[in-house]
Length: 145
Image (cartoon, rainbow, N blue to C red; front, side, top):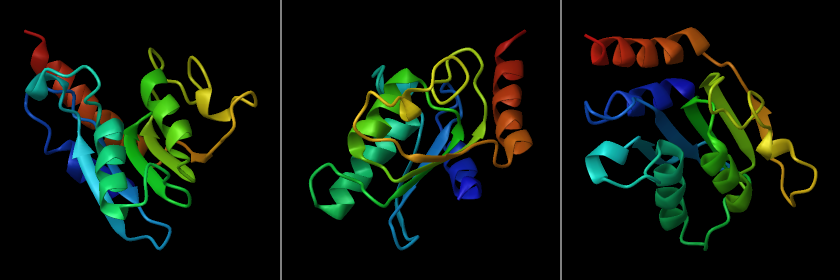
């Protein structure tokens, strides 16, 4: 699943941070994939996770709930994306690299496991972490003179 997210990340516009997200249905079939598109679209909410969740709900045609689905993403979700995961009722989250500056699935916060919320997805972290981190390292290295 993370390999598919890595493929998605590689499709990001060269100006966008290469983060990829893929939603898989309960049967394991890929429903949707997306890459970060904030720079390309001028939309601050165009994170890969949000775009993939939106596309997956359109494919399912069953409203906004993604119960039983899995989201695979190359980077630990931020607060906005973690909140979207909870609100979508996603069943599982699998992510690659940790994000110590903005991560909301254990690094800075742990939104998805907050017992005050009405849904908590199962989480698997650090899958293919070196490969996912390399995408980011390469991008940021290319941005610095």
